[in-house]
Amino acid sequence: LYTNWAEKGQYVTDWTEIERWDRDYYLHNVQSGRSAGFTAVDRQDGNWLTLCDGTRLLDFQSQLISDSLGHRNPGIYDEIRRAMDRYGHVFFGMGNTYRARAAKLIVEDILGTSSPHWAGRVRILASGTEAVENAITVARLYTGRQVILTQAHSFHGMTVGSSMLRGYRNNFTPSGRTNEVRDVPGFPVSGYIPVPPPERSDFVLSPCATLPSLAATEAIIRAIGAENIAAIITEPMFGAGGLWPHPDYMPGIRALSLKYGFLWIDDEVLCGFGRLGEWFGYQLASDIHPDLMVTGKSINGSTLPVGAMVTNRDIGEFLDEGRWWSGSTWDGHPLVCASIVGAVETMLREDMLTKVQQRGTYLRSRLDEVAARHPCVGHVGGAGLYHVVDLVDGTGDPIVAEDRWSAFLGDTSDHPNNIISRECAARGVLLGGFVPNTIKVGPPFTITDEEIDLAMTAFDEALGAVDALYC
Ligand SMILES: Cc1ncc(COP(=O)(O)O)c(C=O)c1O
Image (cartoon, rainbow, N blue to C red):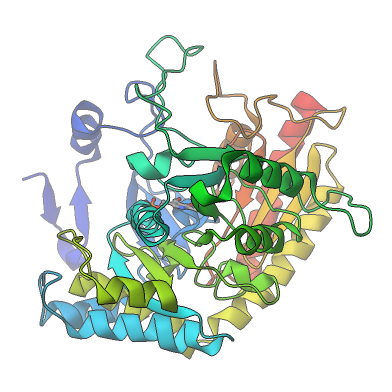
């Protein structure tokens, strides 16, 4: 009724109606529906978005550091179209071509090339948070234990089990009472125990010393009793929290899990499938591999809702010998699996890892150059095409004291992340952050050097606004 095909086959949309329907009926995330601005996307092409008012924005954060192969990448779209000629939905009790091809690509062609060949089986799911739920369940079934250790500031999804792995807890600030935060009643659910977050990569450690976070984690393990712990879950680089850990941290966590005999769940939903310049973030450290790994986002360039859980070979055999009464409507969906096949084959064909490494090196050099001009930049960290920039005040402290703890109270419009995002948008670049002091720089793998330059010019100017206000 309101959208017509105009000449030349272009959509003509009545944005006034669309805005009204969106404001009146959609249940919005994060911002309150009443106070949210209406920033609607009309179309997406490669690394660019066109907004409903015709503004073009360079997507320098790949939406949620998720749309890694640019928008509507032909390699993925062609595979989905081919799949749609044959398939609608096939339930998990029956096989389909794409489920098998996606599983083979992940377990044999990607993970099978790393030594040792630790990966056993993969299940394809509808989201990252579901992959985390599956990993929690499998860890508990396999070990017969309940406790899951999880780091402060981490994020693993928004379903009940995943949101107990804190960071962000599905809490709520009522309208007009911005100094109040309500937790979901019943929080916390027992069986999830937080450990301290890792130190940042620039933490200075004396030779042969142990990171304080690892020492504290070991003390917690001893206090709980290793015999009660099913697993610890970690992110190679914090997604929502934007924290680039010290290089000793991930190997230290793996060593603790081996020493005390519980599983290590590596959450690669944001970092996996190339984001950090390796297929998976754990590969940045030498000689370690997880027991369970969860992925999502880049596995199909986020073209369709997706997640996946990979088990090691022992856990895969354990589950396969029994009957695991599990499964949801969307497991192994042929169209989702086709999108994975399209994305992974495109990455292999185009040697995307090398491109991420090359473009990442250029991006980092430009970020360091820009950072050197601004007193508000406290630290830059990251790898590949995911870098985080921590912003500080004139004394070097985080500008918003709450920093990476969630529950940001009061008027957030002057939080540095929001200043940067406003100023960059005014210059044609989508770039910002979730926690107030940290900007998350995560462009698509298809970004060009010229586009990096354009974004860095906008970022440079936006940082000037933060300097002026806080330094
Ligand atoms: C590290 C990490 N784990 C899990 C999730 C949840 O994934 P999804 O949003 O697909 O449920 C996210 C989402 O951003 C993430 O960054």
